[in-house]
Length: 286
Image (cartoon, rainbow, N blue to C red; front, side, top):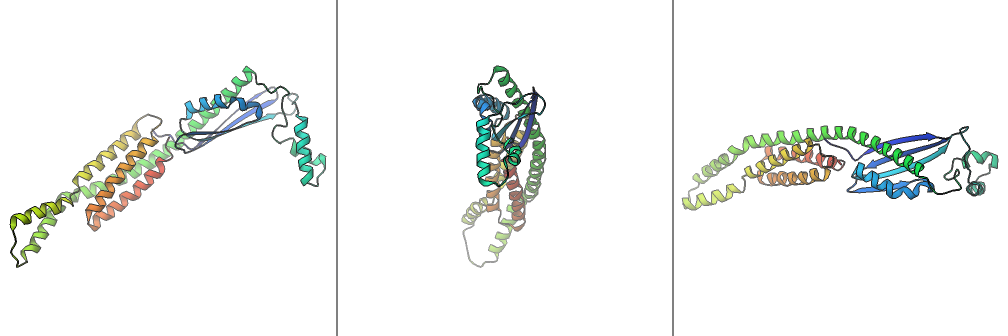
């Protein structure tokens, strides 16, 4: 199960002519980073919101936007006259329009509707946190949908690496023997005398540098480990998958440096291409 860090969720609450709307946007990040944007009336709930969201979202660069609107005809909306007057003065300084024409714009500006009492009641706090929780749950559902697409892509790239690994492994066991035979044939064509025992030692040392069986085994282990982590139901696994991808890259690079074969290099390039795609996608995994 994969969960993406990218997502969007919103929730609303309507009562007594007032509508509370909370929107949460999330992008990838190494840790939990919250940007809380709300009317001054709700800013005292910043810490409570952070604790609640951290428990639900775990990681990601999250932006919380809180909007409060008064619905016409459903109750008296307290107007902050000082704020209205300030907005009106500012707009008149840059606009030729009359006050009547500017008024609709002013009434949509932040903090125009405000209570004389800046304190928030326990009921209002409970409503806010409940609405925030619903928005976070909607974000989690969105993340899970994105995670399904991520998991499919990661699995496809993993299968490409496995296919190339299988192709290389099929040729690796005969590669050393073939190379040794060619070297011996070339030496037999020489008329110089040489020490056969010393030659055998040098051949062993030389051919060991080309042996990639150990790297193939380790790469296969990393691929299986990556797959097993994909299948786990743990919600947070992005960092772990990133570490495994780094280990996969080390083995692929070593195989490429030892291969010294045109066909092997093609397979190595294909594996590197798939691995880069995996690394990019893992950055979005929770």
